[in-house]
Image 1 (tube, one colour):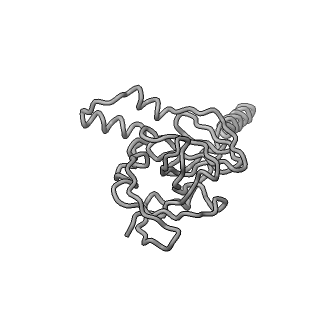
Image 2: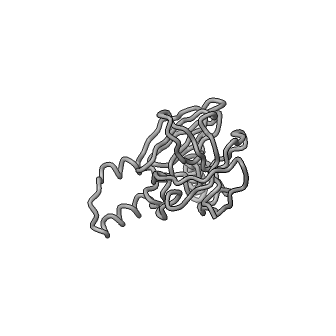
Image 3: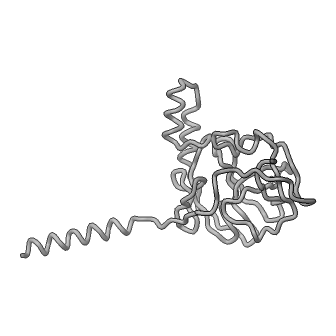
Length: 200
């Protein structure tokens, strides 16, 4: 009887230890990885030929064909996962994805984004190269017998970022291709439009 009781206590302790190490998740069920085809809607939309590959998820995303952008937006309507048109510190206009919203705390551990201590569970929530996760990318390079910078690839997939607290008018933007793009904290006035999709 004592043996059974001791065994039960041990099981409970192991269960509690396992639970204490778990991380809660922040899941985005709204943002689709698929890029929509849209028509120019009105005077506030423009069509551009985007020439950078920082948003490539393996299908030449956002730079293979013309992109429609809605300008004069209300930034307080932006949601996590939105793809935006913004002006970087050098004055260049770029496309990137909204990851962190005003007043949130952002950090990255081993290529995984965390928001307010919660793991971001979304197709854009961790490091990717051309739409591939670390092992998929390394295997693809090996299978193709491609020459690549393994140290740089590992640094991308194992990215670390100490926690940054965003201000009440700041957004954290990340390119979908971490190797080809960048991460930026931008002020709301730098965001000049939202990407609606490809021109129909």
